[in-house]
Length: 395
Image 1 (cartoon, rainbow, N blue to C red):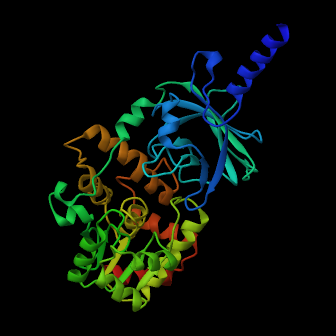
Image 2: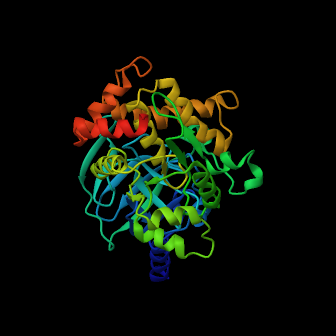
């Protein structure tokens, strides 16, 4: 009888501690996920924890929770938020269940590839979070466990930034809004020279044919594609739903500059591709189109930089950037000031300070053009290259 009791106890313990997605019953149904396989997510940098979003949420985890992520090699993320979007500041860690992802993912937002390096943790003797970059040493043989720290710690941010858009044209007031297409004409940028939009070739959001019509009408002669490689574009062209003949003509003529940029605008790779893109644009006549997938994040940074370089004011840059959030989500300063302010602070202002390099600078009064030129010089562009690019944009 005693042996039977011991066997049952050991079996119960094994069921709790083994396998992927088991709840930790002895602690009062506190959500936990243990010993789950991981996979390197290479495009944007991060670690897939191979359980589906639905299965993970069924364990009791909720968006806005504080969680602890522990890898089997001892590498740990303490007190990170669990969100369904990239709602943390640049360089901060999170656990994310992004719509469309196969699995939940641990990542550093706009930061180092978590698989290779980068950790955000709470110092043992302080509640202040600090950045520590060290070798993560992860490989495909490692596993990950996720534990709940506290429900709802970050719920206010989750609710403020939990926004979604539709891919149905009928839900938008115009073709332009649906395509997120517009002529950028702030500062000294010449009207009819620079355009921005969603992708004219990647039709996953059903917008590409609309963008294609607009760039044909505008006579766009050169496209700066921030999102794609040539290999990706070839796949889009071969797809059954590809319907962008004008884009195809530009692509065949060698007038599509493919950069395949990551999402980390502070990374060396991102910065190097800015120089590559601007110099390539200088070698081709406009009008120009800048796009990524949605025309929102990478496009937002590049257009902000071009606008600042061309003498646009802080308010002009803000107004152009936030049109995207009106187009996709109907978020404006009047309609939803709380969300508007959070998006502005967490996204655009963070981008601007990346260019300015000093968070003590008043962005409203700063000479943003001078800062943009210094930024590009630091990336390796010469004064002659900067002036050549400006000449193309300003006419």
